Image (cartoon, rainbow over all chains, first blue to last red; front, side, top):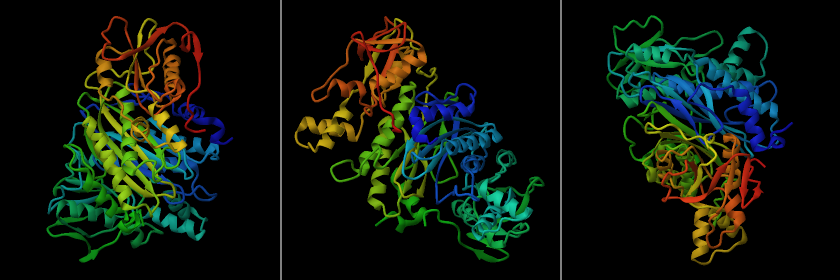
Length: 301
Length: 301
């Protein structure tokens, strides 16, 4: 069965049937959803994923379920990076008519299940036909009364801390491209490429610790800390870049898509739950062991 | 200049430079935006528009500015149909690399200016490359303390009222397809196809009057009232379908994209600001002068 056989309303019914009932006052099926925003603000972010550019559904690459989870994860990581808790997803699916219904269902199931990991729900969406398969995901979140943690608050003397993994997704993608498929390590890295595992709860936790800035690593540690340094008007000195087996220093510095969270926290705060990467200083740029680090990923190139 | 020359960050800078500074606590440039949700809830909806299916940028059809305004309008009409006031837009742009920068800027300007008509702002977004030009728009809104007006609350005895236009966009599209371009009437209808003019403020106004159900006419009056009848478990009897010069009864009954608002309101309420179309009765379906009306638009067909 392909989605064109279902028609718009059939496909919507099929999709909403898989989502379960979100808690009131939310819900698909009306002109718009209503989502709780208990503290009087809502955090919102949107991302597009295009087949052939951000994911591949070919055999051996990603399943539709993986892609759905990844699409949810990268959006909810942006919510966590503000110090917020994800509450809701809206999903837009632009698809060729000959997409199999099973693939559409896999995408939706992945979005639903990754959302459930944070307590969020899919509350609405849209389906349209397009020659290019594209997922548009919007995530909403709740700051629970805290101030948002932006990229612009890092201060000289702050400590730079990491939650989550660096370079795994990049190493896994390189393995997939090389055709390597054997062994537990390869499997773990490839899985990290297929479905990131952002440390969602670290976002609110770091905000509670008084984080002065935070970002999720989507374009690579160097590039994303570069945004923090530029927005905050500071220099960031890295002393340590944690490496895992199979992950090179280039993967760890320049690989995106693991959606680790990196924050700056005032000195003296107990950051024993996190990995200390370095310190904030006066100046500009990102430096590792006294050398300036540049580069990053341009999604548009 | 084409967007590929600017790169991701150059294009983002170009776009955000055109948006102006939204009021705090919102703003593009961080991992996510923060939007006020004063009454503790946020209304949210998302729509995709694909070139060649939902719009055409060919000479004589729509300008990029028109398409941007239309994309904002159709999303904000969904917010208004819940009885809410639009507050913010997030925009996703999936584009071929050879899109002219002027076209990208036209899209953004249109989104910005239509948002400004309701007091909303563009607060965030994403740009990615794709072989197919696609706009993904998410609109957020504020219920200002009122209960959301869903499709499910119409009750027998309620009056059916209309704010806005019916069939103009459909008549304008037919004129564009036929090649007609001359005259004030043709111009008005074609303009209505290019840029709808939803009666945004009628959404909150009808909610304040105690509307029991509301919907925006995106798929045609018959189809959208059919959703209300089904969701509410009622029959809707239409006595009047207002026609304008150049608009046929088929346009008015089955043409979407004008994003008029249709609501049901308890009998006895002063609805003199609106056009009375008919009444809610027991039973099912939508009826005009005693005949059952069927049909509508399947966006996916």
